[in-house]
Structures are given as structure tokens and as C-alpha cells.
Length: 567
Image (cartoon, rainbow, N blue to C red; front, side, top):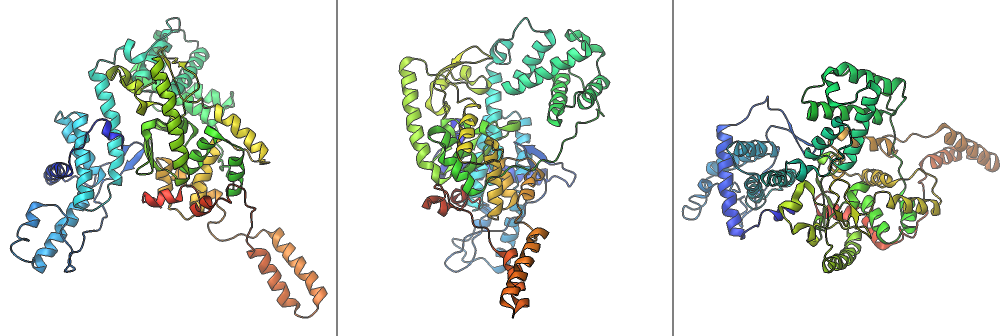
């Protein structure tokens, strides 16, 4: 986990001692503030965490006598076992009941409530990270239960730690946190850029939002920030309607304009835009393009080097192209076969399994990347862009190997915000060029893009009967409805629908056989129709599928998912 950047774990005994201390405080908090049914769910890294008791079963280990040990970790429940003999049946039942009651309240939602109470008491984020770590240790070591639901809390706390340390260092000033602003731009645009950068928005988002603001100002005849004094929700509503009716723009373009203006009202004007009832652009229902496993293998055969590794990451882990090229060295955990994805779409983070097929290629690529970094260090040019002004908080971090981009560019480039030169990651447009050539060489006529591999990842896992909720987690979707679109791609789900054309052809073939054989016509007709309906589709194997490792995997990262408990 990336948490070791901030928290240095001690010995196992020390971690267990702190785990019990914080668990006792958590129990005290739950006894004092048990919560209520009116509690609202909270969102952490895009994941909706619901209130209410956890539906967990006791998983205590059995002793030599066949009885289940109490794993609640409560000192009182262990008292008397060493010298008083075996506990009575009533005592054991009470202990089990107490344990299940403890587990029922030991949810991510209640941990969030506990952390918020510590925040209100003035506890800094790095100490709250220790609390999460201690509770995770208690889950694993004492209760013998998984701690997967607490991982998003730890990853979110890491982001809060970075923000807190940046602000403590005084990086909210325009010169340090914002970077360079063109003084010749309109004052409204300058203020919007400052606000977006302080809010942690990416450069791509900044460019998109600023472009929509400029279009709005041009359409309404606005020239400066003071002109917005008379601008309200009605003007925004009219502008969005004009985009949909007269401009005939796509729904995504109109939505970007809406969110950009919403951010401007909130961050710069400091007022609520109000309710918008504009005519929305029609967003048709799109079914993702999905390649078969054979087609994926043929595309892989047309790629090599870094572009093959990126393609296998997209297909094997369900990554977006932006997530793959932004991977840093520290994000790869070879021991646990996991890859961490940070600051993805919507600022979310998640962990995905590392396919066994990619372990050796990534390790070779890591060695090559280390050699390039050592060359940069020797030249005194080693530098990489870091988020949230960490480069000023930790001056040596940009030169550390762990923070470098895995897929680095061959040359240094200038940061458009700060003007400094760094070795950035590969440009997003580099891979699609090589992908397009590979698709053409494979003779595939489908519209294949970088995102198609993500669609293939989800659909092929669905074909392998992977739970839809697990696929949602691996893709990083906030709502399972977004993941459900892949069920429309899978024609293997639900009853088989036989085309009338296929049925007609089967009947014609059956009739021809009747004329030739004469006797047994009815039986032949039934057999012919049944074979036409039920015969399996056989697809040719590509060179990629013929590999024993690919056949053994049975799909994208299936072995890694099993090892991580995701299968």
C-alpha cells in the first residue's frame, strides 16, 4: 500500500497493541453514538458507503477440542480461559453474541463517523491514517476477517494528508500553488484558472471548463468579471438550451458546459447558480464495442514493446488509457500482485489485480526505467511532476525513483502551468496511433479505440460469470448501473433467441434431407433444426490464444483476481 509513504509500521506486537487500543476507543464511540436509521450514506473515492450493521458471520478458528475460539479481541472475554477451564455453554453463547454484535457495528460507515469525530477534536490526517491502519490490523489479526471495505478509506486519507501538508507549508498562495497565469487574459478567466488549480482540477479539465466559460461570455457579450453581477440561472439556462437547439451539440458537450459554469459560479462568484431547467441534448443509448478473445489476440500480435505492455494493461486490468500512462513506479506491488490507480476519473482511486502474464514484462520494464532515471540523476536533470505542491514540501521527491512515471517520455517537456521542465509520461495520443495500425493489420473492421480494451475486460469477465459488483469495483464505477451496460453486450445472458432466418434455413435443410432419405423424415427434421439452433460457435485461435499461459488464464487477469480474492 502507498500508505508506507507516511506511516512506518512497527513490529507485529506493537501494531497489535495499538490495534486493540484504537478498537477499544472505537467501541466506546459506538456505545456513545450508536447512530440511527436516518443516517445518510457517504461517498468515498466514488464508492457509496451505506450506514447500518454489517452482515458478517463469525469466522473464528477452531481449537483442538472442536470449539470455536472467541475472536472478538476483548480482554474481558478472554479472562478465565487459562485457569478456569473451558467456558460454559452459556458463556460461549454470550461471547459469540457479543462478537457478532461488535462485527455488526464494525463497518466502513461507522469508521468514517469515528474518524470525523477525531478530526473535529483536532487530530491531524496523518494520525487518523494510523487509526485506520490499526483498525485494519484488528480486522485481519484479531477478528480474522477481510479489511477490503476499509482500503478506500485509507486511500482517501492519503489524499487528505497531501492536501493538509501542502496547506501547512503555505502553498495556497497564487505563486506557489497556482503556477503561471497569463496576465493578458480576461480577469474572469484568470480568476477561474486560479480557482480550478486551487481546487485540484487537472489541466485537461481546466482547459475544457475555461473554453466553455469563454463561449458563454462571447454568447452573452460579457467582457469582464464585473459583468457577471447581472448574470443568473436564467442566462445559463438559455445558453444551455441554445447549445442543444441551435448548436445541435452532443449531450457530453452540453454537460461539460453546465459543469464548467457551475464550477465558475461556485468557485469564483461564490454563489449558487440555482435550479436549471434547460432543454437537454439527446443522449442516445450507446452499446460498447467489444472484441472477441481471438480479435484481442490478433491486435496484440501487431503491437510490440511499450505499446504491447500498455495494451495488455488496458485489457488485463480494465484501465483507461489515462490511468495506464500515468502509472508511477510506486503504484506497482509485485509481492501482492496489485496495481494502485490514483487520481482517476472524478479524483477516485482503486486497486486492481496484476495479471501474472504481465509480471515479468513489467519487471523488465521497471529495470529499463531505473536505468533511464539513473542517467537523468547523473546529468542532474531528474525531475517529475508531483501533485498538490509536494515538490516544494519534499524537495527530493521529484528525483526519487519511486515517484517517476513508469511509461516515461523519451525527452523532457515543459509544464504548461509552472513552466518547469520534467520527464513526463507518454502522451495519450501516442498509443492510439500504434493501436490503429495493429487493428488494420489484423483485418478487424470494428471501431476499436483504447477504451475498447476496457469494454472487453468487463464483458469477458461477465462471460466468465464474474459477479457484476466485483466488475464494478474493478472498473471504479460509482454506480452499478454504469456497469450494467455490459449485460446488454452479452448475448449469452438470459434465454437463447434463435433468429427466424436461422430457423427457416434449418427447416429447409431438413426438408431436403427428407426428400433424399425418404423414411424417418420427421425424425431428421427435428434433429436438423435442433442442431442448427444448438451448435456451438467455433472461433479460430490466434497466436496469442495458443499460448499455454493465456489458455490457463481463461480471460483477463483471472488468476490474479483469484489470488486477490476478486474471483
